[in-house]
Length: 81
Image (cartoon, rainbow, N blue to C red; front, side, top):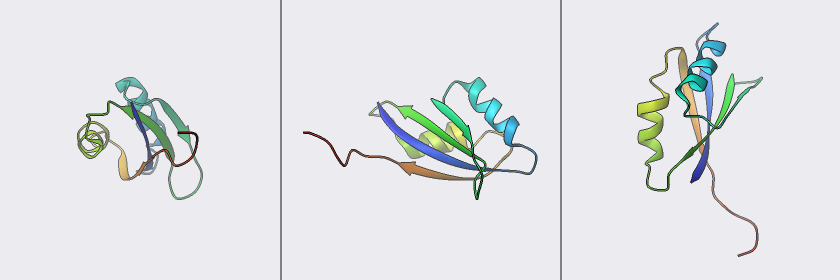
């Protein structure tokens, strides 16, 4: 499984609706409310063969109430091995 994060900027007054929609869709591993430029930080896991761009475009950005997203792709940079 490949982990990645998406920061969400929601339309005004829509943060809780977006967070609930993500939870109900059962596509997110963790959902956090944040302060600053973005309203939510969400952790996702996808199969190694899943295209992250298509996943975000087709399953995430279609949720009503989202104004903008910022995807952060992670990789293993430290550790044994």
